[in-house]
Every structure is written in structure tokens, then in C-alpha cells.
Image 1 (cartoon, rainbow, N blue to C red):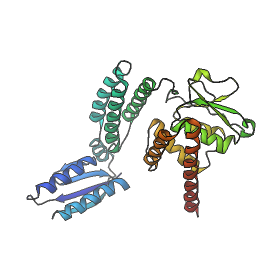
Image 2: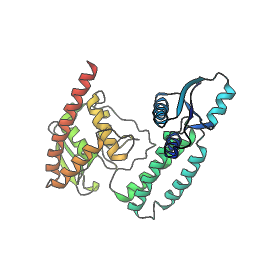
Image 3: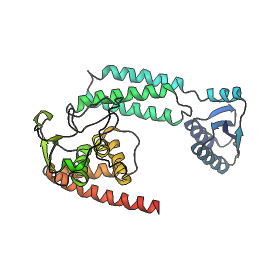
Image 4: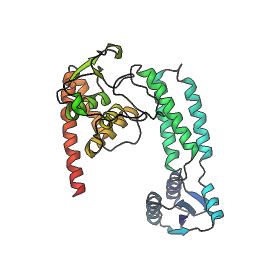
Length: 321
């Protein structure tokens, strides 16, 4: 197994630099073999982390050597791996999450949402330095998803709440059989419903008509509901409605659409944050505030998504040439 070894020394007089570098090494999840000798598994990210500290050490008047280390001894590799065991960190997180889960049905939803955000940040910090992930990480991720689903159900009782662990099959459909249909979803459009309506209108049913529902029970029998429990198209497993529609109608090979789907997924249920997500969220929030109704909102949002799609298409084409 390959490792990276940082051997360093710093002038004793520069206490500020010593503290700054020590904190950075701790944040990177380094294992200290002895004073001034730090270990990380070899990899691009850990290489960058160590190289950044080498520059800091040299700038502070110290010395630093970054050495590759290959261990063929299985026992020694195992001993090194144990230095990166995050069991204690995960156990503390589980204690916090168990307490949060116990409050989901009785606590104030907005307070719970803030606590969940803090827990997600703490989890992400541990995951960032969990170089040998195992069952503990998977268990806590599932627990976070469960808690998030329970809080979301309290905050938005009409939102689709399909279990994240579900592995429902998505049937492949012919868009030709879905032309000129009435599509229905809940009023007060937000990201997933907004983007799904755009996807339907631009790529699935170019003659689509839309009905905005006060509640899912108002969905007309002959219409195609989307993004609510029991709808024809809604969340399946970890996929949001936009992703389900794209998969259903064979649109997943369109890389630009999938980039938009990744943003929609993040803004709807969280996960890995695409770089464009914050910008799109801000724009859509502004459109929602300035649009007089959902019809006007969809027109405005569609123009933004059209532009984003064209930009993504162009970048994808340039990347392949």
C-alpha cells in the first residue's frame, strides 16, 4: 500500500505559524507518527494537502520533506490503517443523530432543520478524512437520510416522501404516446417541479398543458401527475422527479440535461453541490418573488433553464472536441 510521509520542523519562536500548520494537518486527518512526522494515505487530494503545508512550513522558516512510502508488509499496513479509524467520531455523531431522530415527530421543524444542517456539516467533516470508509459511514448516511425525510414531511406535508432506500424500477416510455397531455403538480412551484415542468415542455411533450394543484387529491383522473406521492412521475429511490422523468423518457444520455439534473437534485434533497447550484437557486428565488403566478413563473424559469442548457451543451461539445 502507498503512503505519504511529511517530515517537518519549525522554528520554536514562530508560535503562530506552528499553530496554523498544526490545525491544517489535523483538519486533513493526518496521523502523527511522532513529533514532526505525519502520515496520510497516498492520493491526489492528500498529496495536495501535504504540498500546501510544505509551502507554509518553508515560508515560516522551517524545513519539510514529503516522502512517498510503499509498505509491502500487511501487518504494518494494517497498523497504519488503524491510525485512521474514525469509529470514535462516528460514534459521537450517532449519539447526536439518535437524539435528533427522537425529536423529529415532536420538535419544531425549523429548529430541527437547523440541527440537521449542523449534523450534516459534522458528518461531512468526518467523511472528508475517512480514508478507509466502511459500514459506520453507510449507517450514518442512512440515518441522516431518514431524519431528513422525517423533517421534510413535517415542513412540507404534501411533498413526495418516497423512502431513499427504495430501489424502484423506472419503466422506459415512448414520448410519442405522451403528447398533448395535461400534466399536474402542486402549485407554488419550486426547483424540482419547476425544472420538471420545463423538461416536460421542452423534451417530452411539446404541447403539454399544466394544472397547478392546491393539494394532490385535486389531481384530475385523466392528467399525468408529477412530484407528489402517488403521482405518475415522482421520486424513485434517491432520484428526484426531474431525474425520474429523464430516465423514463430516455434522456439520460444528454450530458447537459444531466448537469441540470444534478443541480435540481442538490437543491431539492441535498447531496454533492454542483458549482452552479447557488447561483441558480438565487435566480429562481428571485423569479418566484417577482412572478404573479405559477404560469408566469414557469415562463421565466424556462428562459433561465434554456440558457443554462445551451451553455452546458456548448461546454460539453467543446470538451469532446
